[in-house]
Image 1 (cartoon, rainbow, N blue to C red):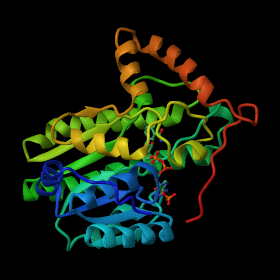
Image 2: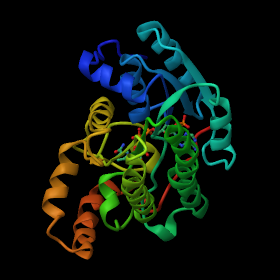
Image 3: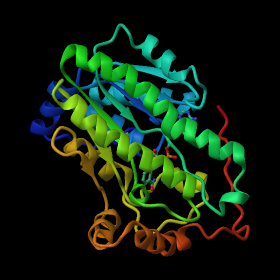
Image 4: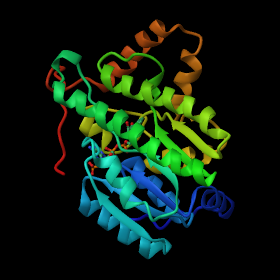
Length: 285
Ligand SMILES: NC(=O)c1ccc[n+]([C@@H]2O[C@H](COP(=O)([O-])OP(=O)(O)OC[C@H]3O[C@@H](n4cnc5c(N)ncnc54)[C@H](OP(=O)(O)O)[C@@H]3O)[C@@H](O)[C@H]2O)c1
């Protein structure tokens, strides 16, 4: 349900609406950070295209946003692991004046790499990286043509070094972090803002799907709000105490040293009931 307590401060709402409206595409809008970001954007008066696989959740969110914030919405129930998904999103939104792509959809796996099902690891690369590049390419071109727009890309605290027991997931997030840093400088002079959001643990559907046990998690609304506040102002934002703490404390270490520390941090989070075997479930489309 839509949290009607989300009250975008007028100045914040105006900045978002003028800079990144009148329409935004949010992937991963059926849960967690993507859903929270859709609510924040609707509260700012931005119309929304909501993308994820679970249609009923998207439909419920769309009706809630319409009723609460009087914004227009479209729902696209799509599997971003499918190669045609980004083209479908681009064509279904071609008549809309989209000013923001929030590419939030993604998932993680955890456990010993050799125990993680190979299909799940490859699907994660498709959703976390391939679909993001495909969408960013299509929408960045549109934003550059109108000389205004924004890209929100989901990195993570694991993006800044290799991470044992979440090796593929961390690598997908390192890809996004690097991609966002490069794009930001390339697109900035065309009027297109890019932010990489690198939160620590966030309370969402992520934990169950990745088979992790996370503590010190922040709520998705905080992650979404801090990410949108950074868009157009900073290249990377690190919502949550743990992400900021690790940035400061790991900065002096070489990459191999950071990986050793992350092995300890992630060790607790990726301790599975099944004795360490990787697990990754597909949700029904
Ligand atoms: N939670 C954390 O601790 C954390 C920390 C750092 C970064 N992140 C990143 O933040 C992003 C959002 O994660 P979250 O915490 O909000 O997790 P979440 O609650 O599980 O939400 C993930 C969203 O992605 C969508 N999604 C997953 N696979 C999809 C697919 N194949 N096609 C279309 N949509 C798909 C899900 O929708 P459907 O299942 O309905 O398709 C859902 O809306 C991810 O990129 C994640 O890597 C999360």
